[in-house]
Length: 488
Image (cartoon, rainbow, N blue to C red; front, side):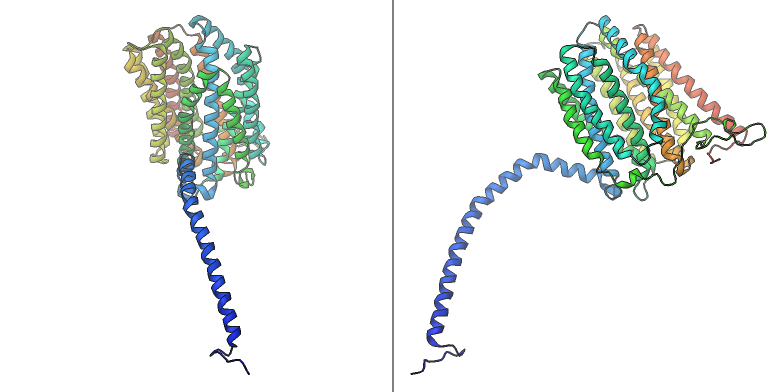
Protein backbone atom coordinates (compact mmCIF):
# COMPACT_ATOMS: atom_id res chain seq x y z
CA UNK A 1 0.00 0.00 0.00
CA UNK A 2 1.29 3.39 -0.84
CA UNK A 3 2.23 5.57 2.01
CA UNK A 4 -0.04 8.51 2.69
CA UNK A 5 1.10 11.88 1.47
CA UNK A 6 1.33 14.93 3.58
CA UNK A 7 -0.04 18.20 2.29
CA UNK A 8 3.43 19.16 1.20
CA UNK A 9 3.76 15.92 -0.76
CA UNK A 10 6.16 14.27 1.67
CA UNK A 11 5.58 10.74 2.93
CA UNK A 12 4.14 10.37 6.36
CA UNK A 13 7.14 8.45 7.55
CA UNK A 14 9.46 11.03 6.08
CA UNK A 15 7.43 13.77 7.65
CA UNK A 16 7.74 12.07 11.03
CA UNK A 17 11.50 11.81 10.59
CA UNK A 18 11.77 15.46 9.67
CA UNK A 19 9.62 16.39 12.62
CA UNK A 20 11.76 14.38 15.02
CA UNK A 21 14.92 15.95 13.59
CA UNK A 22 13.39 19.35 14.07
CA UNK A 23 12.46 18.53 17.65
CA UNK A 24 15.95 17.21 18.37
CA UNK A 25 17.51 20.28 16.75
CA UNK A 26 15.29 22.51 18.80
CA UNK A 27 16.21 20.62 21.96
CA UNK A 28 19.91 20.95 21.20
CA UNK A 29 19.41 24.62 20.45
CA UNK A 30 17.68 25.11 23.74
CA UNK A 31 20.57 23.40 25.55
CA UNK A 32 23.08 25.55 23.66
CA UNK A 33 21.05 28.61 24.47
CA UNK A 34 21.04 27.56 28.08
CA UNK A 35 24.79 27.19 28.09
CA UNK A 36 25.19 30.58 26.39
CA UNK A 37 22.88 32.24 28.85
CA UNK A 38 24.84 30.65 31.66
CA UNK A 39 28.14 31.88 30.27
CA UNK A 40 26.52 35.24 29.73
CA UNK A 41 25.54 35.35 33.40
CA UNK A 42 29.19 34.65 34.32
CA UNK A 43 30.91 36.58 31.53
CA UNK A 44 28.88 39.76 32.00
CA UNK A 45 30.20 40.55 35.50
CA UNK A 46 33.73 39.57 34.45
CA UNK A 47 33.61 41.98 31.52
CA UNK A 48 32.23 44.68 33.79
CA UNK A 49 35.06 44.11 36.26
CA UNK A 50 37.59 44.22 33.42
CA UNK A 51 36.15 47.49 32.17
CA UNK A 52 36.25 48.93 35.69
CA UNK A 53 39.89 47.95 36.08
CA UNK A 54 40.84 49.40 32.68
CA UNK A 55 38.82 52.61 33.12
CA UNK A 56 41.45 54.48 35.19
CA UNK A 57 43.86 54.00 32.27
CA UNK A 58 41.64 54.02 29.20
CA UNK A 59 39.42 56.86 30.45
CA UNK A 60 42.18 59.47 30.81
CA UNK A 61 43.86 58.14 27.65
CA UNK A 62 40.68 58.68 25.65
CA UNK A 63 40.27 62.14 27.18
CA UNK A 64 43.86 63.09 26.32
CA UNK A 65 43.48 61.78 22.78
CA UNK A 66 40.22 63.69 22.33
CA UNK A 67 41.81 66.93 23.56
CA UNK A 68 45.03 66.65 21.55
CA UNK A 69 43.25 65.64 18.33
CA UNK A 70 40.54 68.33 18.47
CA UNK A 71 39.88 70.88 15.71
CA UNK A 72 41.67 68.94 12.99
CA UNK A 73 44.86 68.33 14.98
CA UNK A 74 44.35 64.58 14.69
CA UNK A 75 44.09 64.62 10.90
CA UNK A 76 47.09 66.93 10.42
CA UNK A 77 49.37 65.04 12.82
CA UNK A 78 49.67 67.93 15.31
CA UNK A 79 47.91 65.82 17.96
CA UNK A 80 50.66 63.22 17.83
CA UNK A 81 53.29 65.95 18.20
CA UNK A 82 51.44 67.30 21.26
CA UNK A 83 51.49 63.84 22.82
CA UNK A 84 55.16 63.37 21.94
CA UNK A 85 56.01 66.72 23.52
CA UNK A 86 54.16 65.65 26.66
CA UNK A 87 56.33 62.53 26.81
CA UNK A 88 59.40 64.73 26.35
CA UNK A 89 58.37 67.02 29.22
CA UNK A 90 57.66 64.10 31.54
CA UNK A 91 61.04 62.50 30.84
CA UNK A 92 62.93 65.76 31.29
CA UNK A 93 61.35 66.49 34.66
CA UNK A 94 62.29 62.99 35.88
CA UNK A 95 65.95 63.71 35.12
CA UNK A 96 65.72 67.23 36.54
CA UNK A 97 64.37 65.97 39.88
CA UNK A 98 67.09 63.32 40.12
CA UNK A 99 69.93 65.72 39.32
CA UNK A 100 68.58 68.53 41.52
CA UNK A 101 68.38 66.19 44.49
CA UNK A 102 71.92 64.98 43.88
CA UNK A 103 73.67 68.24 43.00
CA UNK A 104 71.65 70.81 44.94
CA UNK A 105 69.63 69.48 47.89
CA UNK A 106 71.95 66.82 49.29
CA UNK A 107 74.72 69.12 50.56
CA UNK A 108 75.08 72.43 52.49
CA UNK A 109 74.51 75.70 50.59
CA UNK A 110 78.17 76.66 50.13
CA UNK A 111 79.07 73.22 48.86
CA UNK A 112 75.97 73.17 46.67
CA UNK A 113 77.00 76.42 44.99
CA UNK A 114 80.36 74.88 44.19
CA UNK A 115 78.72 71.74 42.85
CA UNK A 116 76.29 73.68 40.67
CA UNK A 117 79.08 75.95 39.44
CA UNK A 118 81.08 72.85 38.52
CA UNK A 119 77.98 71.41 36.86
CA UNK A 120 77.58 74.61 34.79
CA UNK A 121 81.25 74.69 33.86
CA UNK A 122 81.41 71.06 32.75
CA UNK A 123 78.01 70.77 31.08
CA UNK A 124 76.66 74.15 30.06
CA UNK A 125 79.92 75.81 29.06
CA UNK A 126 80.54 73.20 26.34
CA UNK A 127 76.84 73.46 25.49
CA UNK A 128 77.25 77.15 24.61
CA UNK A 129 79.76 76.02 22.00
CA UNK A 130 77.66 73.10 20.76
CA UNK A 131 74.28 74.87 20.72
CA UNK A 132 75.02 77.19 17.76
CA UNK A 133 75.97 74.11 15.76
CA UNK A 134 72.67 72.32 16.42
CA UNK A 135 70.57 74.49 14.09
CA UNK A 136 72.89 74.37 11.06
CA UNK A 137 73.45 70.64 11.57
CA UNK A 138 69.72 69.94 11.61
CA UNK A 139 69.31 72.10 8.50
CA UNK A 140 71.38 69.45 6.74
CA UNK A 141 68.97 66.72 7.88
CA UNK A 142 65.63 67.94 6.49
CA UNK A 143 64.64 64.43 5.42
CA UNK A 144 65.33 62.88 8.81
CA UNK A 145 63.41 64.94 11.35
CA UNK A 146 61.49 61.99 12.78
CA UNK A 147 64.73 60.06 13.09
CA UNK A 148 66.40 63.08 14.72
CA UNK A 149 63.62 63.35 17.32
CA UNK A 150 63.75 59.60 17.94
CA UNK A 151 67.53 59.80 18.26
CA UNK A 152 67.25 62.60 20.84
CA UNK A 153 64.79 60.46 22.82
CA UNK A 154 66.89 57.30 22.59
CA UNK A 155 70.06 59.17 23.58
CA UNK A 156 68.41 60.50 26.73
CA UNK A 157 67.02 57.05 27.57
CA UNK A 158 70.51 55.51 27.47
CA UNK A 159 72.07 58.48 29.26
CA UNK A 160 69.45 58.16 32.01
CA UNK A 161 70.75 54.65 32.72
CA UNK A 162 74.32 55.97 32.84
CA UNK A 163 73.20 58.75 35.20
CA UNK A 164 71.45 56.23 37.46
CA UNK A 165 74.78 54.47 38.05
CA UNK A 166 76.66 57.75 38.44
CA UNK A 167 74.15 59.11 40.96
CA UNK A 168 74.37 55.96 43.04
CA UNK A 169 78.17 55.82 43.02
CA UNK A 170 78.94 59.56 42.85
CA UNK A 171 81.29 59.06 39.89
CA UNK A 172 82.38 61.76 37.47
CA UNK A 173 80.31 60.15 34.71
CA UNK A 174 77.51 62.36 36.01
CA UNK A 175 78.81 65.48 34.24
CA UNK A 176 79.42 64.26 30.67
CA UNK A 177 76.17 62.28 30.81
CA UNK A 178 74.30 65.39 31.98
CA UNK A 179 75.89 67.36 29.11
CA UNK A 180 74.66 64.72 26.68
CA UNK A 181 71.14 64.94 28.12
CA UNK A 182 71.19 68.73 27.79
CA UNK A 183 72.36 68.68 24.18
CA UNK A 184 69.84 65.97 23.22
CA UNK A 185 67.03 67.89 24.93
CA UNK A 186 67.82 71.11 23.11
CA UNK A 187 68.24 69.26 19.82
CA UNK A 188 64.75 67.86 20.27
CA UNK A 189 63.44 71.38 21.00
CA UNK A 190 64.99 72.77 17.83
CA UNK A 191 63.57 69.98 15.65
CA UNK A 192 60.16 70.28 17.30
CA UNK A 193 60.05 74.01 16.50
CA UNK A 194 60.94 73.27 12.90
CA UNK A 195 58.30 70.53 12.63
CA UNK A 196 55.27 72.48 13.88
CA UNK A 197 54.71 74.49 10.64
CA UNK A 198 54.48 71.20 8.73
CA UNK A 199 51.59 69.98 10.90
CA UNK A 200 49.26 72.99 10.98
CA UNK A 201 45.56 72.03 10.72
CA UNK A 202 43.32 74.14 8.44
CA UNK A 203 42.59 77.64 9.81
CA UNK A 204 45.19 77.13 12.57
CA UNK A 205 47.66 79.92 13.25
CA UNK A 206 51.20 78.97 14.14
CA UNK A 207 50.94 80.68 17.52
CA UNK A 208 47.84 78.62 18.36
CA UNK A 209 49.56 75.39 17.33
CA UNK A 210 52.64 76.20 19.41
CA UNK A 211 50.49 77.11 22.39
CA UNK A 212 48.79 73.70 22.23
CA UNK A 213 52.12 71.90 22.04
CA UNK A 214 53.51 73.94 24.92
CA UNK A 215 50.43 73.37 27.08
CA UNK A 216 50.71 69.64 26.45
CA UNK A 217 54.28 69.70 27.71
CA UNK A 218 53.38 71.78 30.76
CA UNK A 219 50.51 69.50 31.77
CA UNK A 220 52.67 66.39 31.39
CA UNK A 221 55.42 68.03 33.45
CA UNK A 222 52.91 68.91 36.18
CA UNK A 223 51.72 65.29 36.34
CA UNK A 224 55.21 63.75 36.20
CA UNK A 225 56.84 66.04 38.80
CA UNK A 226 55.10 64.58 41.89
CA UNK A 227 55.61 61.07 40.49
CA UNK A 228 59.34 61.82 40.16
CA UNK A 229 59.41 63.13 43.74
CA UNK A 230 57.74 59.92 44.91
CA UNK A 231 60.26 57.79 43.05
CA UNK A 232 63.06 59.90 44.54
CA UNK A 233 61.85 58.99 48.01
CA UNK A 234 62.35 55.31 47.12
CA UNK A 235 65.88 55.82 45.82
CA UNK A 236 67.98 58.41 44.00
CA UNK A 237 68.14 56.29 40.84
CA UNK A 238 64.42 55.54 40.51
CA UNK A 239 63.44 58.78 38.72
CA UNK A 240 66.15 58.00 36.16
CA UNK A 241 64.70 54.54 35.61
CA UNK A 242 61.37 56.24 35.03
CA UNK A 243 63.01 58.61 32.55
CA UNK A 244 64.46 55.62 30.69
CA UNK A 245 61.01 54.06 30.25
CA UNK A 246 59.43 57.36 29.18
CA UNK A 247 62.11 58.22 26.63
CA UNK A 248 62.02 54.72 25.16
CA UNK A 249 58.31 55.23 24.60
CA UNK A 250 59.10 58.60 23.01
CA UNK A 251 61.57 56.94 20.65
CA UNK A 252 58.82 54.82 19.15
CA UNK A 253 56.24 57.62 19.22
CA UNK A 254 58.55 59.83 17.12
CA UNK A 255 58.07 57.53 14.14
CA UNK A 256 54.28 57.78 14.40
CA UNK A 257 54.43 61.39 13.17
CA UNK A 258 53.23 61.85 9.57
CA UNK A 259 55.80 61.31 6.79
CA UNK A 260 55.37 64.94 5.68
CA UNK A 261 57.46 65.91 8.72
CA UNK A 262 60.49 64.67 6.77
CA UNK A 263 59.59 66.60 3.63
CA UNK A 264 61.92 69.47 2.77
CA UNK A 265 60.19 70.58 -0.41
CA UNK A 266 60.68 74.32 -0.97
CA UNK A 267 62.79 74.88 2.16
CA UNK A 268 66.06 76.74 2.46
CA UNK A 269 68.42 77.89 5.23
CA UNK A 270 67.69 81.06 7.21
CA UNK A 271 70.19 83.64 8.49
CA UNK A 272 69.16 85.78 11.44
CA UNK A 273 70.18 89.38 10.68
CA UNK A 274 69.04 92.62 12.28
CA UNK A 275 69.83 94.70 9.20
CA UNK A 276 69.67 94.05 5.47
CA UNK A 277 73.12 95.62 5.20
CA UNK A 278 74.45 92.24 6.32
CA UNK A 279 73.51 91.00 2.88
CA UNK A 280 74.00 94.18 0.83
CA UNK A 281 77.05 96.25 0.10
CA UNK A 282 77.30 100.01 -0.59
CA UNK A 283 75.82 99.53 -4.06
CA UNK A 284 72.94 97.38 -2.78
CA UNK A 285 74.32 94.35 -4.56
CA UNK A 286 73.66 91.09 -2.74
CA UNK A 287 76.66 89.39 -1.24
CA UNK A 288 77.04 85.90 -2.66
CA UNK A 289 76.38 83.61 0.25
CA UNK A 290 74.76 80.49 -1.17
CA UNK A 291 71.86 79.06 0.79
CA UNK A 292 71.45 81.98 3.23
CA UNK A 293 68.35 84.16 3.60
CA UNK A 294 67.34 87.03 5.87
CA UNK A 295 64.39 86.75 8.25
CA UNK A 296 63.65 90.45 8.70
CA UNK A 297 64.24 93.26 11.17
CA UNK A 298 61.06 92.82 13.25
CA UNK A 299 61.82 89.15 13.83
CA UNK A 300 65.39 89.86 14.86
CA UNK A 301 64.45 92.56 17.38
CA UNK A 302 61.66 90.38 18.76
CA UNK A 303 64.22 87.61 19.14
CA UNK A 304 66.43 90.00 21.10
CA UNK A 305 63.60 90.75 23.54
CA UNK A 306 62.87 87.04 23.94
CA UNK A 307 66.57 86.37 24.54
CA UNK A 308 66.52 88.93 27.37
CA UNK A 309 63.52 87.20 28.96
CA UNK A 310 65.12 83.78 28.58
CA UNK A 311 68.32 85.15 30.15
CA UNK A 312 66.25 86.42 33.10
CA UNK A 313 64.65 82.97 33.41
CA UNK A 314 68.02 81.26 33.73
CA UNK A 315 69.20 83.93 36.15
CA UNK A 316 66.16 83.67 38.43
CA UNK A 317 66.23 79.87 38.51
CA UNK A 318 69.77 79.69 39.87
CA UNK A 319 69.83 82.90 41.89
CA UNK A 320 66.53 82.32 43.70
CA UNK A 321 67.33 78.64 44.25
CA UNK A 322 70.34 79.56 46.40
CA UNK A 323 68.86 82.74 47.85
CA UNK A 324 65.71 81.00 49.11
CA UNK A 325 67.71 78.09 50.45
CA UNK A 326 69.83 80.46 52.55
CA UNK A 327 67.06 83.01 53.28
CA UNK A 328 63.65 81.30 52.96
CA UNK A 329 60.44 83.26 52.53
CA UNK A 330 58.93 84.51 55.79
CA UNK A 331 57.51 81.68 57.85
CA UNK A 332 58.36 78.96 55.32
CA UNK A 333 61.09 76.36 54.92
CA UNK A 334 63.60 76.50 52.08
CA UNK A 335 61.90 73.71 50.15
CA UNK A 336 58.45 75.27 50.51
CA UNK A 337 59.79 78.71 49.55
CA UNK A 338 61.34 77.35 46.38
CA UNK A 339 58.18 75.36 45.65
CA UNK A 340 56.03 78.51 45.92
CA UNK A 341 58.22 80.36 43.43
CA UNK A 342 58.28 77.41 41.02
CA UNK A 343 54.50 77.03 41.25
CA UNK A 344 54.02 80.76 40.60
CA UNK A 345 56.31 80.65 37.56
CA UNK A 346 54.59 77.54 36.20
CA UNK A 347 51.13 79.06 36.67
CA UNK A 348 52.21 82.25 34.93
CA UNK A 349 53.73 80.27 32.06
CA UNK A 350 50.55 78.23 31.56
CA UNK A 351 48.39 81.36 31.71
CA UNK A 352 50.61 83.14 29.19
CA UNK A 353 50.37 80.19 26.83
CA UNK A 354 46.57 80.16 27.11
CA UNK A 355 46.34 83.93 26.53
CA UNK A 356 48.66 83.62 23.55
CA UNK A 357 46.33 81.09 21.95
CA UNK A 358 43.39 83.42 22.56
CA UNK A 359 45.15 86.49 21.14
CA UNK A 360 46.20 84.52 18.05
CA UNK A 361 48.68 86.73 16.14
CA UNK A 362 47.26 90.17 16.93
CA UNK A 363 49.95 92.92 17.08
CA UNK A 364 52.84 90.63 18.13
CA UNK A 365 55.36 93.51 18.26
CA UNK A 366 53.13 95.45 20.66
CA UNK A 367 52.59 92.36 22.80
CA UNK A 368 56.33 91.72 23.09
CA UNK A 369 57.19 95.32 23.96
CA UNK A 370 54.38 95.46 26.52
CA UNK A 371 55.12 92.20 28.37
CA UNK A 372 58.85 92.91 28.54
CA UNK A 373 58.10 96.34 30.02
CA UNK A 374 55.87 94.64 32.60
CA UNK A 375 58.71 92.31 33.59
CA UNK A 376 61.08 95.26 34.02
CA UNK A 377 58.55 97.03 36.25
CA UNK A 378 57.87 93.87 38.28
CA UNK A 379 61.60 93.19 38.78
CA UNK A 380 62.31 96.77 39.90
CA UNK A 381 59.35 96.71 42.29
CA UNK A 382 60.42 93.36 43.77
CA UNK A 383 63.98 94.65 44.16
CA UNK A 384 62.91 97.80 46.01
CA UNK A 385 60.26 96.18 48.23
CA UNK A 386 61.84 92.75 48.51
CA UNK A 387 59.47 90.25 50.09
CA UNK A 388 57.81 86.87 49.72
CA UNK A 389 54.72 88.10 47.90
CA UNK A 390 56.59 90.27 45.40
CA UNK A 391 59.14 87.54 44.64
CA UNK A 392 56.29 85.14 43.85
CA UNK A 393 54.61 87.85 41.74
CA UNK A 394 57.84 88.42 39.81
CA UNK A 395 58.13 84.70 39.10
CA UNK A 396 54.53 84.63 37.84
CA UNK A 397 54.94 87.74 35.68
CA UNK A 398 58.23 86.45 34.25
CA UNK A 399 56.65 83.07 33.41
CA UNK A 400 53.60 84.71 31.85
CA UNK A 401 55.66 87.17 29.81
CA UNK A 402 58.16 84.58 28.62
CA UNK A 403 55.39 82.32 27.30
CA UNK A 404 53.45 85.14 25.64
CA UNK A 405 56.55 86.75 24.13
CA UNK A 406 57.71 83.42 22.69
CA UNK A 407 54.31 82.81 21.09
CA UNK A 408 54.39 86.34 19.66
CA UNK A 409 57.83 85.65 18.22
CA UNK A 410 56.37 82.52 16.61
CA UNK A 411 53.61 84.67 15.11
CA UNK A 412 56.17 87.11 13.70
CA UNK A 413 58.13 84.30 12.12
CA UNK A 414 54.93 82.99 10.58
CA UNK A 415 54.00 86.44 9.28
CA UNK A 416 57.35 87.77 8.11
CA UNK A 417 59.45 84.76 7.13
CA UNK A 418 58.84 83.10 3.75
CA UNK A 419 57.60 79.54 4.03
CA UNK A 420 60.68 78.12 2.35
CA UNK A 421 62.93 79.36 5.18
CA UNK A 422 60.52 79.25 8.12
CA UNK A 423 61.58 75.95 9.66
CA UNK A 424 65.24 76.95 9.55
CA UNK A 425 64.40 80.27 11.24
CA UNK A 426 62.75 78.39 14.09
CA UNK A 427 65.84 76.22 14.51
CA UNK A 428 68.19 79.21 14.66
CA UNK A 429 65.98 81.25 17.01
CA UNK A 430 65.54 78.34 19.43
CA UNK A 431 69.31 77.87 19.61
CA UNK A 432 69.87 81.54 20.46
CA UNK A 433 67.23 81.43 23.19
CA UNK A 434 68.84 78.36 24.79
CA UNK A 435 72.27 80.00 24.80
CA UNK A 436 70.72 83.08 26.45
CA UNK A 437 69.27 80.88 29.20
CA UNK A 438 72.70 79.37 29.85
CA UNK A 439 74.28 82.82 30.12
CA UNK A 440 71.64 83.99 32.59
CA UNK A 441 72.14 80.88 34.69
CA UNK A 442 75.88 81.49 34.83
CA UNK A 443 75.31 85.06 36.07
CA UNK A 444 72.84 83.84 38.69
CA UNK A 445 75.24 81.27 40.12
CA UNK A 446 78.02 83.79 40.83
CA UNK A 447 75.82 86.54 42.30
CA UNK A 448 76.05 87.38 46.01
CA UNK A 449 72.98 86.19 47.92
CA UNK A 450 71.46 89.62 48.25
CA UNK A 451 67.85 89.77 47.10
CA UNK A 452 67.67 93.47 46.27
CA UNK A 453 70.98 93.47 44.39
CA UNK A 454 70.15 90.31 42.48
CA UNK A 455 66.73 91.48 41.34
CA UNK A 456 68.16 94.82 40.22
CA UNK A 457 70.66 92.89 38.09
CA UNK A 458 67.81 90.83 36.66
CA UNK A 459 65.83 93.99 35.92
CA UNK A 460 68.86 95.48 34.17
CA UNK A 461 69.20 92.45 31.91
CA UNK A 462 65.60 92.72 30.75
CA UNK A 463 65.73 96.53 30.51
CA UNK A 464 68.65 96.36 28.07
CA UNK A 465 66.74 93.91 25.89
CA UNK A 466 63.59 96.04 26.03
CA UNK A 467 65.36 99.30 25.16
CA UNK A 468 67.24 97.64 22.29
CA UNK A 469 64.01 96.20 20.88
CA UNK A 470 62.04 99.46 21.13
CA UNK A 471 64.91 101.46 19.65
CA UNK A 472 65.34 99.04 16.76
CA UNK A 473 61.64 98.93 15.90
CA UNK A 474 61.29 102.71 16.11
CA UNK A 475 64.41 103.22 14.01
CA UNK A 476 63.18 100.89 11.30
CA UNK A 477 59.80 102.65 11.26
CA UNK A 478 61.40 106.13 11.21
CA UNK A 479 63.62 105.31 8.25
CA UNK A 480 60.92 103.49 6.41
CA UNK A 481 62.94 100.31 6.25
CA UNK A 482 60.88 97.19 5.68
CA UNK A 483 60.27 95.12 8.77
CA UNK A 484 59.35 92.07 6.76
CA UNK A 485 61.86 89.77 5.21
CA UNK A 486 62.48 89.16 1.57
CA UNK A 487 64.33 86.37 -0.12
CA UNK A 488 67.50 87.49 -1.86
